Amino acid sequence: MIDLSYRYPTSKEDVLRQVNINIEKGCVYALIGTNGSGKTTLCNVMRGFIPHFYNGDLRGKVLVEGKDIREWALGDLAQKIGFVFENPFTQISGVKDTVFEEVAFGLENLGVEVREIKQKVKHTLQLLGIEELQDHKPQELSGGQKQRVAIASILAMEPDILVIDEPTSQLDPLGTEAVFKIIELMKKRGMTIILVEHKMELIAEYADYVFLMQDGRIVMQGDAATVFSDKRVLQFGVTLPQYALLGIEMNEKGMLLPRIPITEREAVTTIRNWLEGEGP
Ligand SMILES: Nc1ncnc2c1ncn2[C@@H]1O[C@H](COP(=O)(O)OP(=O)(O)OP(=O)(O)O)[C@@H](O)[C@H]1O
Image (cartoon, rainbow, N blue to C red; front, top):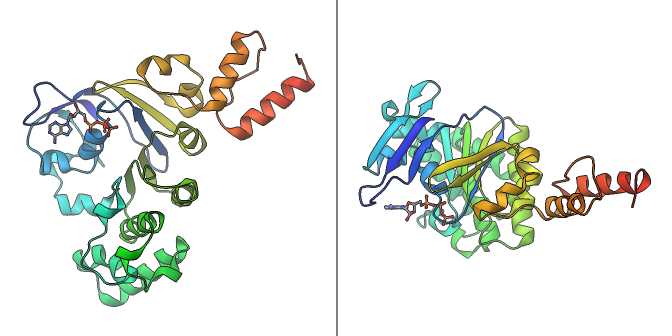
């Protein structure tokens, strides 16, 4: 995205302001920022809903594989970029009787041949470890199961890029962990993932790169370790992973760690090494 600015038809001012970001293949990107900072709008641009569904005023460039997003047909873009909504209830079609059919739905819409659909659905269900749900009614699943089925229905279409907007906001810790295990698995398979998430510990664990938004602008960006060791993040109304907060506090009290840990694992090793070496 180059100098991207956008205003919804009904909004008085720009909700994206001169956004410059570069998304590389195979990395996990996290979008963070306070409510209303523009994260979902940016996702809407990435998946082509802006400008294809929303009018408004879009300036600057969004290039997908070198071609401007305005020139992509939405159908072609949908095959390339999968999108998982915050609320799995919106994603489940409501017209299919079983999970198997639900996951097949997108492929049917793409006109894929029946035999191939069956193979792909089976493979996806296996990959996500939810084969046992295949004959269940989608409407009768738990929130966490629904979210996994929603993700499966997107992954079955084998997109190159997955955009996930707050996938775990409605889930309990176990459901959340299951979704992040899927994200990790997809990353290992070379998928590019763009994630909106408020739980900083999870971002620290899984994301390679972080974009921090405020008022429609990208105000900080960098690899997760760099952004999360920087106390300025707090000025933008966003919290830091608890391990980073601990590290920063220790440094401020003169207990100088060689680096700010951002995950539990890093915190344990860094503090253990510090205790064994320099120590209190
Ligand atoms: N369809 C719309 N029409 C007009 N304005 C909109 C529309 N959708 C969002 N906005 C405005 O655009 C701004 C950015 O909203 P957006 O939903 O992108 O923020 P966000 O960072 O995703 O927030 P949240 O964390 O609450 O989901 C807000 O001021 C919001 O009111």
